[in-house]
Image (tube, rainbow, N blue to C red; front, side, top):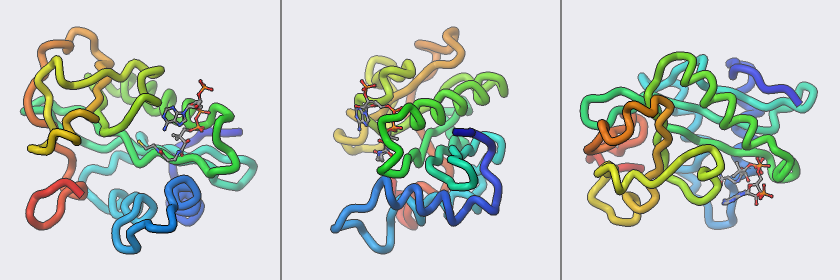
Amino acid sequence: MKIRTFEPCDLRGAKDALKSAFYREDSDPLFNEWAFAETLLGSGGYLPELCVVALDGEKVVGYNALTKARIGSVPGLALGPLGVRREYQNAGIGSALVRECMRRAEEAGFPWIALLGGDYYARFGFESGKPYGITVSENAFDNDHLLICFLDKAQKGGVSGRLTYCNAFYDADGNLL
Ligand SMILES: CC(C)(COP(=O)(O)OP(=O)(O)OC[C@H]1O[C@@H](n2cnc3c(N)ncnc32)[C@H](O)[C@@H]1OP(=O)(O)O)[C@@H](O)C(=O)NCCC(=O)NCCS
């Protein structure tokens, strides 16, 4: 298994991996994580060095991206989409993708990474944004699932307010997709 920076030739494999990870019978044909990943690549939030794939030989089996974000006026990163092909799950690939992105983000000097997600992320040091007064929308469910990891521990408690993703995460009315 190898993890490296996403390259344009990986697009089809990355979308297939995300589809394998996220597809459900009732998946929205218009908005889904694999189409969204492609949209993100063409957006102003895309950071090429912070977008990685996991390969089994030549086959893309996992994908993770970090994109530009802000909390208030403090720049940081948003994590996702993250997905591992179904038949490759529970073998440490998701963890390896997240840890590699976190390593690169820290090396690049980003102070924090935020995301909307669940229990999986606690193992990497993500915690609720609530005690820090960080929100992502007016929606309580979204805010309950807002997680943050402070790469720069000195920023803990010093970052507060609304998390803003790059434009690709919002519809024409400014609502989170
Ligand atoms: C979530 C995902 C990326 C994890 O990748 P993975 O390679 O299977 O994960 P790892 O092998 O690194 O870690 C496996 C561990 O994570 C746990 N785990 C996996 N998905 C989880 C979830 N949704 N919530 C909590 N724990 C989860 C497993 O139970 C396992 O726990 P253990 O270490 O105690 O045995 C992968 O399962 C996936 O693509 N899921 C579908 C898409 C998705 O939910 N993406 C994240 C959206 S926020």
